[in-house]
Length: 154
Image 1: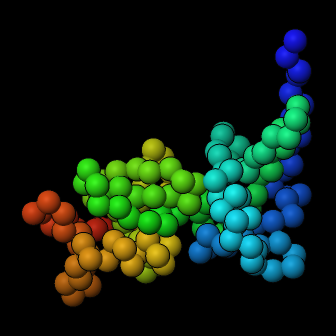
Image 2 (image 1 turned 135 degrees about the horizontal axis):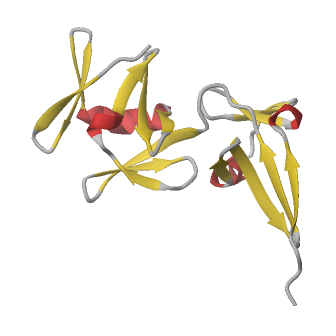
């Protein structure tokens, strides 16, 4: 016989942790210092019609905590050169780079993927920088022998 799963949902307003605009986790004591805890939180990020949340299951109890974030909950944390360019997200998911999905906003590099806004963190930006070009006040990315303009958005 299968045990029924009890779901506990914590709304965003009651979460005791949050993510800043650089993808760093915080609670009332400050920024999370333990690397393994930070990585665990990132890997647990999911999204539904109500927004982003972290989830974990212990026994027959599933906790789902919607959390506040300053900019976006998804970040490019690594760039891999295999089968084109693969972007590694803070969740551990890998997505192919689509140059036309890139944009710049407030001096930060982002992309849109499946309706989600994803920001390059410092490490991701450093890794993609070898493909970036700047001419005057315009941004470009060079891939596979072509150059694609990266638009700026307000």
